[in-house]
Length: 286
Length: 354
Image (tube, rainbow over all chains, first blue to last red):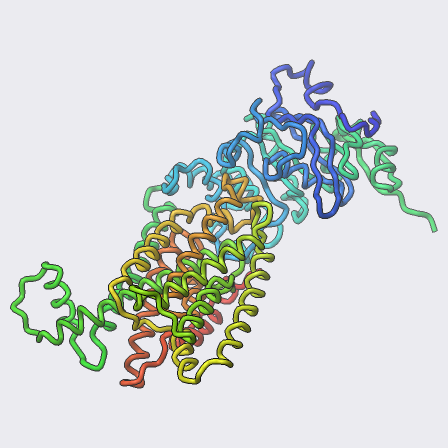
């Protein structure tokens, strides 16, 4: 499928989920979403999309396409200039940060290491939206944090200082923090950019299992198109703040789309074992 | 996982142990501060005088009326002022380092203190006194200067309800240098005697008298307690604004509240006692490096350490060149700097892991 940038992309709930899994209802839905940075003149949208429970949604596109901005809008951190985002059917604009945080967790691309926290202390911060004011964590909070660390293969790092961990270990600790938050929606900004292939696979295995077993909705900005192809149910391909293509990976990751959006000649073949599209750049001949 | 093995259990034990250490440190500082001076009075006698005054002890007085007056009217007020000022500097230092996400921030970085210093300079050099409030006129004018500076920073650096650390620091640096050049102009026109007394005041002076001093002390103590209620949110804010928001913190509003409370605390502290440097930088670092960066620990601990540090430094300053007094701000840096370097070298990996 090669969707033209009309600005009113189709809802993700349609097409894919309706016949196969009718119970999927959107957790987050955005309609006519638009935003712009006054200083740089960058404009995003208008975009329409929805994220269903149990769905893994990938956002791909070249640098500066507005992928991170979109995540920040979905998280409520940025307020859209027009359009409506709803979380469980309620407009995001009327929700307080604390009630959003009980549903949505966010993994930033990089976390500052200004202060010497230990990894477990960081993961425990994920419990903050569930703690009453002026109360500290209970044993159940520690159990949730420890479980999240086991799931992200970071349990052995619990007592290490966050600042002395490698980039990949920090990313996994941040993912553990988001999992400890026990969200309904998980937003990730390039979660695997510093990970080796073993940990890429294990992080995505956890995400897939949480989404399939517990109905977690996942939206991730991804640079690796093959990762997006292999693990995502839906893909949004963006350029210049607009939706260029939206749909199943096999439809979105076409030679034509990639040429138009990334200005790169690629070859797309079918992965023999999974059937997912496999993208690799064509070498320019001298 | 049994109860005794949990991280939370271990954490509670560790924090409590360190809080006890800090409290003992503060208690020793206060006892020594009350005991040492031109008339030495033993700490035991000091405790007895204080307890008797509070109606708690029933000893036959083995002290003279003069000693009682010295302890109750001179030493205790001075030590309490020093302790509360030091505690405030510790708390504000911690809070500013957090909201500016900069480990080098101190309570004076944002220019609030320069506003107070300029106010004090004008009051001292021009000899201004407010009618009926003569003993409080210097602090009042200084505090007014601090609040003017706060309003300026708030207007300039807090754009669209968001606080950008870089803008805020830049704004503070500019305000600091602008106000200090105004102060230089005032110095150059003033008489040497007044400049001398101004300099001594600026470097820290805990000797002001007057019944009014309870008011700023209460304001500062209440402010410190209030800031401490933000501790969990401050932990989240150490991870960046977006991550903090995703953990349920209304980042802009929280930062604005912390900034305003801290501005009032710093304004009061500087108005009371001049600029006592180094405490606000070193106390939070010490607590973070030795125990944890968790603000629920660091805020109370750096209040105790900061208070103890100022009381020790003031006592040392009164004693070392007695009967002359070395300004407390000079002593804090003199003792604090080498100690800080020692800690940094020992634990540099943790503190500077960026």
